[in-house]
Amino acid sequence: MGAGEEDAAAAWEKVEAKEERIMVSVRVRPLNGRESGDSSDWECISPTTVMFRSIVPDRAMFPTAYTYDRVFGPNCSTRQVYEEGAKEVALSVVSGINSSIFAYGQTSSGKTYTMTGITEYSVMDIYGYIEKHPEREFMLKFSAIEIYNEAVRDLLSHDTTPLRLLDEKGTTVEKLTEETLRDKDHLRDLLGMCEAQREIGETALNEASSRSHQILRLTIKSSVKQYLGRGKSSTLNFVDLAGSERASQTASAGMRLKEGSHINRSLLTLGKVVRQLSKGRNGHIPYRDSKLTRILQSSLGGNARTAIVCTMSPAHTHIEQSRNTLLFATCAKEVVTNAQVNVVMSDKALLKHLQRELARLENELKLPESASCTSHAEALREKDAQIKKLEKQLRELIEEKDTVQSQLNCLLKSDADDHANDRAAKRW
Image (tube, rainbow, N blue to C red; front, side, top):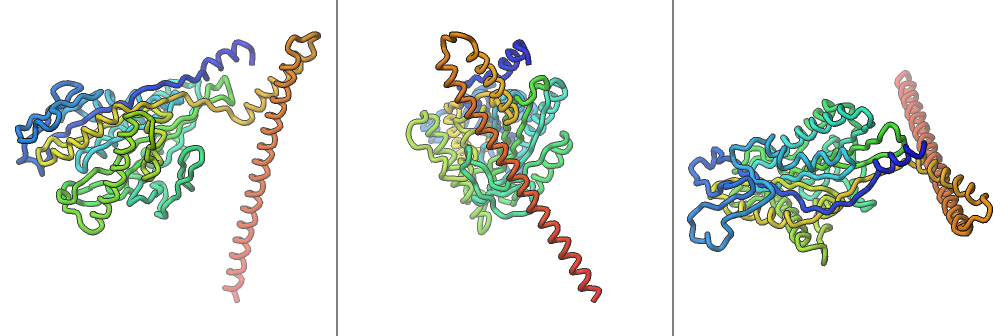
């Protein structure tokens, strides 16, 4: 690679951390059939402000107007919500920046409806971007989990055994299925599978209420074809939170009551985390108090761009829940994240880079009366040590792969022998 190409690669890989606040939008849905006889207490008076209109005795105790990055009224389409409240954040993922889109609100307020549309539009735009950039190579992977009664489940597997969380390089989910995507149709099939697997139940407020938090994760690795071995890796999370609910309103009992209790507790922890982050990062932040906040820690004040769409009903019946949603949104818009481009280099590419650097330093040492001979010698030793370390890691990986392959061959042979013995026994 020549000097000009090295400069171009360096420019493409330039990493800049950027502090910004979480983007917060509010979507007020229309009154539904169950609320047809109720009054509508909330009105979107501008593209950024929602106002409380009801004349009730406690009106003076609460703010009457709430302002956010964007407010969407009952007549706004999901396409508009995506374009103005989520698209910019979602498409950051193709540039190597981690991103997360949340839907938050009480049960039956339109979270899943909104999140489904945002996910579909994001997928179309991501694949549209890929088609327009043939100079880059992309690899997309998809995984999906739900958190049901504080148990983590793999939505791409029919095995409902709860999965463990591991605290390695952040919080990861052990043995989670990750599918390499062939195309957008493959992804749509997987999204359909997730929808079918998710826990759904009927309550007094919603015939098909989501009883779990769902996190869909799209991982995108990309590289400019001209600079093999150098690339970017980032994730996009689509987070459809289960709705907060009051047992008296949902008429919950038995299993539904237990589900609602787990949902409310995890959302309470999420609220505590967001409130603490809105005041700055000083003091203890209770990420570990729930699996939801452990998994989403990097999206809440970490290395990610985040957009939250808070959904609410305008009905007077839900005034308390609607206010709670707006209070959460008010705290969330004060949370600062610190997103950066995630540049990665393969082990082989890094090894080649270090070898080139080693050769350069060796040549400089051969020059007579080098002014920085000592510093070059030290740098040479450091590079040599790094190369040896990487070579050792590569050898260990190869040995591990060979061991696993050998074990697999033994298992397959044993299985074949068992089948042969079974057939022989049946003949006798």
